[in-house]
Image (cartoon, rainbow, N blue to C red; front, side):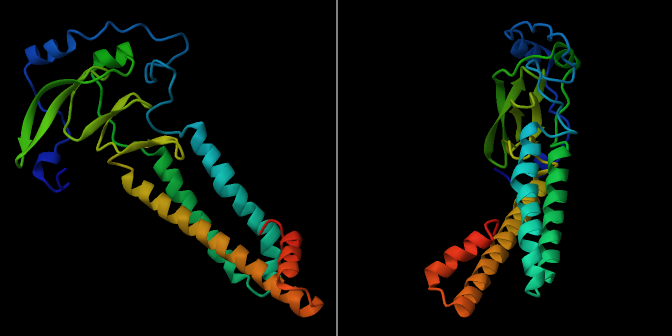
Length: 244
């Protein structure tokens, strides 16, 4: 709601309220059950992955299935024909865009998104995600903002922080949990997430454009050499280079 340069958002610790108020907010919270066997204290009750350090399987599936595999097919099946056509420089452009997309995705996926430390009691108990309780509200530059107590983390939640149910942690300036990355997007990795989206889009546009241009040149060659009609030449070019 407010610009990030506002002094009200520069703190890194929750506001300190009276112990009586915090105790009243957490008094109605259900008693946490012990974590199942084999579940680490740093994981959620449902066996979720650690808050940062390694993306989920969906992140690996995105990188291998949607980014790396099409790129390998492009180099193996289309790159050789581009070299024969004297357009080898295009391969270096595609390789550079792939490297940038890989770096941005890797950093965004393994970066800690801005996790707010839990209380020692909540960390030991490993509570399930629960609804926050409103303690009151404060006014920031005339804008009322609620003060919430996070039952799952056992802390008073900082302003503009939200609880991510996937990681079961409160995160500063939490935006969303991205299944394509396998990680939450928050204050500390938002810029890398935007860079990942931009570089992946660039890589997809370059790969698609060069593949289409390859089919176009092959179609023109077939029409000129064999006298095919435009549709027959296009079909023949697609059959000769199905990867493109």
